[in-house]
Image 1 (cartoon, rainbow, N blue to C red):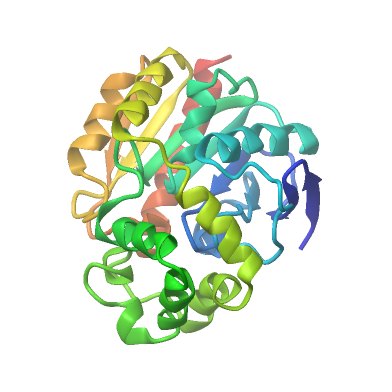
Image 2: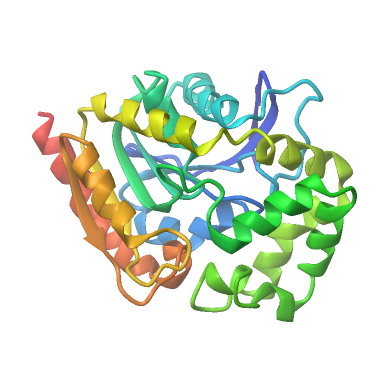
Length: 283
């Protein structure tokens, strides 16, 4: 897997190459880019899919000890990643982790031509639901995160209600989940990176202020939401559409948060309908 050296440290990524529109797909906490494997397999013939492993717990290579891995720092790192790879007019796609939205709040989205927000953290829902609260608590207790990640070796814990059982309706293959959780289970420096992020999440009033600042983003936005999602409130999808001047909502049934796992074909279909329309709209 290729990697690029950023100010925070090495970032591994997959790049399908090609001349098609560029999709940059970001994953959620404690997982990695393999969550997009089915969607990428569908789209790679017509799009250039770039899938970085973001340093939020599922990354294999630790970041520099002094790296800014706060919510804001990780968002600004996206801009650095795009610049380093020379990518412009990209479609930035978020699922589960919503921190990439702060690029808009910071007015640093010049390289983003279109935005897809799919069942992700939004407004003051950081980190989301019971699983988010559990990770937050684990990061505050000495040894708590190590214990939590060790428990994620067991299927019963992975699929437990209120834990990873609320992330996807369908069981994720064991080898994929092991690749997600192994880094934070085995490497204390990866756990250090994850703790730095989790402890950085601002208070709810600050999060709401940051969300309000996103509304100046006037390029096309697609909001893809799962009505049955137990972590990302359904009304947040509609609120996001109302926030932006050029946004549309697609709801995908029979899915929880990880729509790329539960309904990859429907997700890819929504992407195909959105990106060409955006290109025609922009000339």
